[in-house]
Length: 176
Ligand code: SF4
Image 1: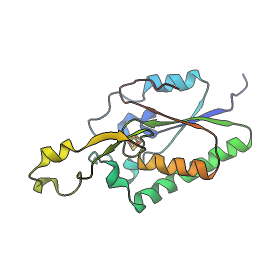
Image 2: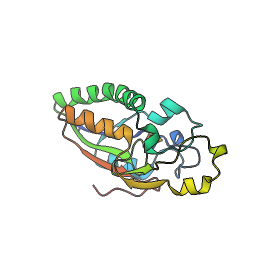
Image 3: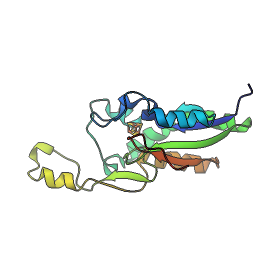
């Protein structure tokens, strides 16, 4: 059978839920429903690296976008993304298409339309006498995570035509 020449980029934990912050993954390994939806479309699936695991490791706490919104995190994100977008660009130059980029609902790194936010979630938690009040300031808000913001910038800089979608952990398929 002829190859379809259709590609998608997926955030790392869609294929490997083990990379998520401890306690937050609702599927065993890969997000089967999302992967099946991509396979049904005939896409070749390219996995992005997990920026949080790369920088903070598997025993990290859950973070909010404000903690990653700094020059170092953005630079490492771009360093991780550029070689992959280089590869995508070579495909595109040869007649392939990047159909979708699939992000993760609510992630401070990989959210596309929703991210996790708090101006107060930082610092020495054991010295925080109002920890439960501080926790209540952590909310899901409109906006992209830092890693995806950098990916959007790179995609725009290179004039690559594609569509961004995001999926939830609980296997809810996106409307796309
Ligand atoms: S959403 Fe992004 S940063 Fe978070 S676990 Fe998945 S790939 Fe890693």
